[in-house]
Length: 593
Image (cartoon, rainbow, N blue to C red; front, top):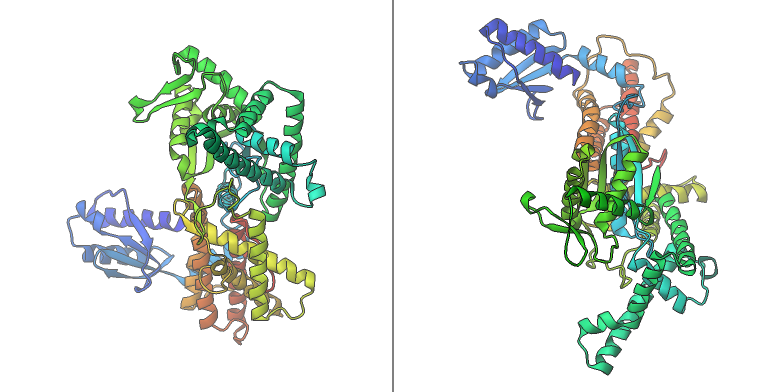
């Protein structure tokens, strides 16, 4: 922050002049709201070097700053804290510089900036996207936007898990029970249709297990292994791996149904990808790399022919990377995918948005890539997040108890419609305008409710609570933005002209400008911590500060044209930052509500 570096230079000068001592590290923090001041120097750590008492030290530095630094107009000392009061001229200079910048806080990527790839969504092609995917997608998309705003080149990607026994289960169930049904003939999205057959497989599988236990008197474990439908699904997988034309054709057809369905959901959520990777492509590269690592001694082969890596000396475990029959495991595919991405893009790091149940998997993956000699493995990051719970308990895909993403989006829109109609503030809106507003409010509520929580924490998702127009919610912030736009529309004078030097700020104006000042560093912090929650909660704090300003000062009603001009400019700047910060969360803001 430019101000901190200016103050730090002058504080060091003061200490040198008064005590004839060079001092290195200084600690600044925002002044507590119950004290006068704008920025605070913590003097306690300085006492190790300067043998004096904290109050005297604060007084001497405060006097020096007031006399020698144009930005400082006063100070007060509370124990080991020097609370510095900044001048009106400082605030006016800062505000004049940022007020018309819609890109305030956003850093463009340098020409030579290395890229960071963010992986998110990464679904299986045997079922539609669900509530768990939504947290993943919203987190990954937002982190990519924040990294980009912080001056990085960010690339968005997903790995689509399009192969394996789970895919064959849907395929086999459709072959047996589908009677040629298609998304068109059924009138439903392709991902839902395929998901229905995944559930159907599980239902038939359970029937066969029960029958085998009754008729043969065998254990449940034996019945699970012998069930004909599972045996047939395994045979189908072997045929797929062998390139059987009929199985491959069915696989391509049903996967395309799913991709078409996913695209509609992504479009409804307002997210996108720069490139898709497919497990059916990358697992082969992974197998090649494992074989090369075997020759180098990174991996070793067991008697049954399976290939492993021993990570016990790193405090981890032994990990299989190829089965005894030569088939790949998830780790094999992830090794291949990582290497392929570095070949495809000029990137120095990757962010994997994956739930915290995979923490161990990513520790192992990153360590394997290091042992294979890839320098970029030091810059891999697992964005580990907690699960999303519902009041009804945990979701299970194969039992059909999952909250479908499309249904949730529709429910959020419907909830926004019901609440908006109860409030009755939509006179003069056409039906089309109303529907668009319900969609923006509903999605904003969903996204904000999920993204305001630190990624590591679990979420208990409550749709009704998320669409509340009061408190720390998306609709409350959207409503404040719409209120600001109403002020701008009513401003029947030229409020763009600069405010002349000498303006005396109201305490609420100063507080609001100080909150605006925090936006650039909040973006950088959110990027460093891979945390959209920092952006979300900053925006809520900004909105609270604006609403306090709105309630305590007259904006359009003041007769002083300079006050009126600055206050409309201030409202406009707050609106710009809300729109910008919500954009980083993937949330739209309505012009009217």
